[in-house]
Length: 141
Length: 227
Image (cartoon, rainbow over all chains, first blue to last red):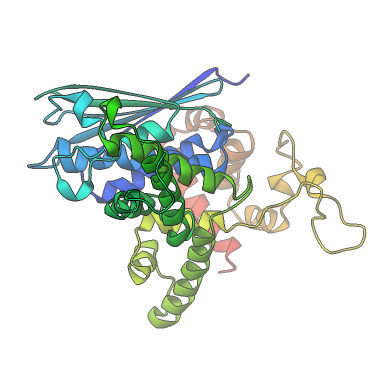
């Protein structure tokens, strides 16, 4: 009998070369859950944005630990990306497009994640880190 | 409601860079120009329907509309659509692979292929995966006129005596092993016993089983490679 809940935990250094790994790891893990190729691409993009945030914003000085948790129960797929970095003072403001601490990124990460996932939640404490939780359902659109 | 060519054109022009920046996030899934166009459709919709009285910044309002327009465009390409750039990338990966094989006189690794194409190794792995032909369970396993179908050729629960053992090459290789090595291989890989169980059955120690197994596997590999 298939287990009702399955999960995986991936931990990696917040460096750019792990970005592609995180993206492909999440997509290949989710591949058996009934998503279309386009939906998998959405998941990859959302993971890219979440992990990029860790690389660029959470650990501006030196790389730190990023924890990606994947879980699937029946047909809901949840990804959480967590860091122990600088944290965000005003989560609500950070989630608005156009707000970014790095101007060239134009601050669309959270907006993209929100648009690509079925639901997204951000929790953060300055000095302690940030956790982004996104859920996806196959056949969402 | 603004006119078709009213002052709102300026708003569209002012945010065209934003539309491109969003389109770029989806790069690789369709032509960038098409993605940009979809984002601009969303931008025009946003400009026409934005109500400053709602107290949200224009970008806050416009970005989700642009993203949803891009996603609608991507969804419209069909359920089994493999993004063309990904397919092309797979072809480029194969081309780079043959070119590098010829240049290096050996099989290039994924990083070398990635470096040649200026993309990340993960993208090479993903692109190559996308290029595998779709197989049908109803297709014949070979071109013989009365060939079995693939679905009939997929083994169920593997019984040791009728699966791997049936390989003539493997049988021949096994027959060339000394009796103790053959016994270890059969116990370990056909009867799926642990090294400890094999040790008990053979009356030797587990490290001895381990050593015999290692040597036997190496011998099998050599023998099956025709050495």
